[in-house]
Structure formats: structure tokens, C-alpha cells
Length: 286
Ligand code: UTP
Image (tube, rainbow, N blue to C red; front, top):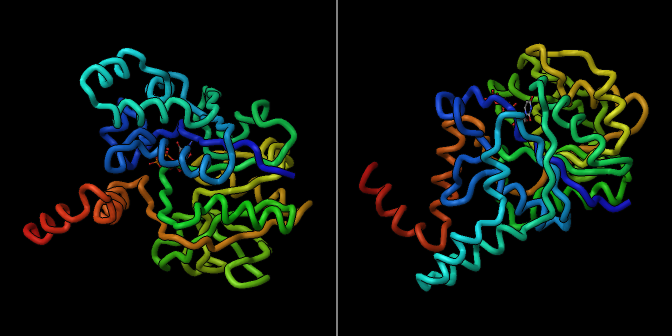
């Protein structure tokens, strides 16, 4: 079955980015000139999905505003002869069909996904977390959709994580199926390094069957009192297989300041306009 919809949870507190996240959603932090959430929507669209459901916190309206049309700005840009920018703004406004659901209580990632249940309906869907940025020649989500097409089961994006960091991830017990593809035998949310069943941590890319919604509904609060998607995946695993893909590409954890800075520098150095100048400036600084 075709994956037609993608859910982008963007209602978290973003505590690792305080104080900016007191007033401003983490998902609007910039990567060069685009906010993280636009980068995520572009990955979704480049993977062939045109319907996007963004989960927002009740009081947050910046994200909706960002994707709204801005006729006055577009007219001003055209009047000033900034045709390239005006075109880019029109492209942004037509990027995808975007709808919003509100997560009134921020009870965790699993709960955020459950909030999108009615909007998704009874069909497989993608989930992409904007603070996990992946620089890849083929979008990570598209790579995962090919695996979903082959196996017809949920697919998790995983990366090889350094041992000390493993306790920040949902971790899989893998059984290798073919290079980079694993059958998931079990999942553990944020294990200690000694208890980790592998070094393969789940990052913010998922293709999920709609049965995940019942699994989330049956999931009680887990680590940190939040309804964890990883715990719901463990329930889903009891009734259907789940696969994991070590996708090709470099992933940045832009949800914390150091990872975000790393992403800025790495992608800045590759930027067609700023790359060379940034390299020179970094040489001067270092
Ligand atoms: P994180 O685990 O990064 O949590 O969420 P967070 O609250 O955003 O950030 P920290 O850990 O406090 O710094 C992963 C994704 O899930 C969304 C976030 O917006 C982010 O895209 N999320 C998280 C929700 O939409 N709702 C929630 O209740 C929790």
C-alpha cells in the first residue's frame, strides 16, 4: 500500500534548547536560512508524499504562520525586483498540503503520533522528527519506503550510536536480513550501555502501519512519565514484524545545541553560496 501521509510531531517542550524554546518552537530553528521543519517537509515531499500533518502545541502558532501565504511580502519582493526570492516564497507556500492537529497535553512522542490518528486514518504513514536532520543523496524516508514496499511492515530508521550516547535512544535487538536491513527482535527505550541489545539506535524516521495507533493507546507512561513511541512499537512487535534500516546518509541530532551547531557547520560548508567563505572564516577562527 502506498504511503501518502507524513506526520511531523512539533509540539515538544524543547528543554535542551532553553531558553530560546520558552517562546519559540525548536522546529523553527534555522539550518542556514530554512527552519528545521521546512527541511523535514522537503524530505517528505522528495520522498513522494504530499500530505503532511503537523502536530503542534496548543499555544503555538508560529509554525502555522510560517507556512501561510504572505501576499504582501511576495508583492514587495516582486516590486523590488527580488524575483528569485519571490519565486522561492511561492514554492514554500505550495510545498505540500499541510494540516495541523493540536496536542493539548504534551505527553510524549507516542502521544503526539496518536493525536494524528483521525487525520491519518487506516493506512500506513511516515513519521519524521524535524530535529533529526539527515544529509543524504537519496532522502532517508524514501530509502525506508522502499523497504516498506518490499516487506509490507513498519520500518524504523536506525543509526550506529557511540556507546556512551546509547542511553539517549530507543535501541533495537537486530537480526540481519541483508546489508543495512534488520528484522527487529526487541526494542529497549534508553538502555544503559551494559543493557543495550545493540548499538543501533532509532532516530526520527519511521514508516508505520496504522495498527500502531491501538498499540500507542495501550501504552502507559514510560521513561520520564511520557508515552513513548518505542514502548508502543514493542507492543506492535507482538502482533506483526518490524524492520529497521541503517539508511545511507549523515544524521545530525539538531535537537541539542552541539548537534545543531555541527549541522550548521557541516551543511554550511557544503552550501553553494556560503560554503567557500565559511571555510575561510573557520580557518581564521581556528
Ligand atoms: P524530543 O524527544 O526531542 O522532546 O521530541 P522535546 O520536548 O522536543 O525536546 P527536549 O528533549 O525537551 O529537549 C522529539 C520530537 O517529538 C515532538 C518534538 O516536538 C520533537 O519533534 N514531541 C515530543 C511532541 O510533538 N510532543 C511531545 O509531547 C513530545
